[in-house]
Image 1 (cartoon, rainbow, N blue to C red):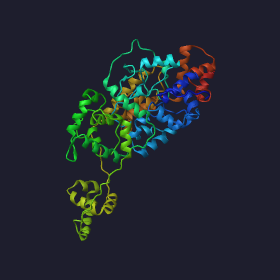
Image 2 (cartoon, helix red, strand yellow):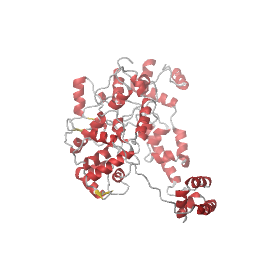
Image 3 (cartoon, helix red, strand yellow):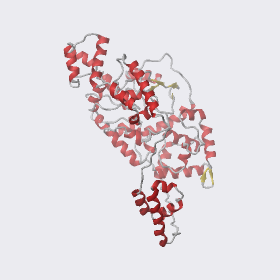
Image 4 (cartoon, rainbow, N blue to C red):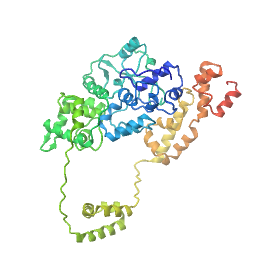
Length: 496
């Protein structure tokens, strides 16, 4: 595509493609991604856009890494995941990702609430239109934890009637935003506190990510320097006291970061041995509290990445059991697993026997346990699947009846129907237990042909008779992608 729009400062790649849609007068979302990214299956993502390699073909002065670190939200997660995981995510972003970066980066499992629409500052949009002649979506406005634009103290508004998950392939341009009557001006101290650290993360660029061992060692040393320890152990009461001094409970609760005093809270996990990654907001909260507000996130990340991990050597204790007793212990365990299986043998009163063999005869024990494994019935009666099947089917029937006369809806596929359910995750994963729901989805899902016919009918009802090429363009169709049934139907009625 000639003269493809260049990314503007702090602009999302999502916004670049949306501006390209306006510039080239492309109505169909699928036509845009086909021309710009050479694929019709690209999902429009604010956080982790894919097919970056295809996008770089439109530029001479932008490479893949500069587009990712300068115009996506990936730099917000990169410093807090392992180096090998980071490179895996980058390789996925270059081509077709299949949602892997959302999982590997910790975004999908994060306790932070997910954003369902695009946010913007009304004053920023007006300034962009005056200065550039067009508006665009900024990265800093899409960050969870920031509710106001610190430049204008304007509350960030969400685009109404636009759900990112519903419009999976559509790139909404910022020029389509209707100005609100009067922007809400308010000074939010928390947003002003968080924004500098988030901007530093977004603009840092490529750097080596610290390992889990380095994060563990760093927090241990920082807790000791902050006098929040009891001997060699962390004093969670003192850490919580420092956190609550800087961060209000209502704000923490808004982002699912409260309570802090439970043994399973994120604060306990981040101050212990790191076995998983934590989000940028969790790191900012505890680092700001332990440093008492006087710290720089760039220098801290550099210090963490450069420190050497102290290896704690484990001194092997002498064997407490003579070698001649191993055979007797093995015979006892072998007799037990043959009788009840591995799982029940471990849960029985033979815990001491298991631990002795685990410490001294580990390879033999693992081999025997694998051989004598028995399937265990984990079925429970906590859920009445019969009743849930009936309730979900009734709910879907209501959804279908309501959507039947709405020609503007996207394709009524299985996925679309499942997304309308309040408990869509449990339904989708247990369809084998819900025969009525499964039968409804198979019977009433809209085929590609039916969806194409509905789009043509919607265009005819809205705009009346049109030339064939105009009709197909307004309906978002093309000669190559029309099914044979749709083509015959249009030809029989003289539409094409």
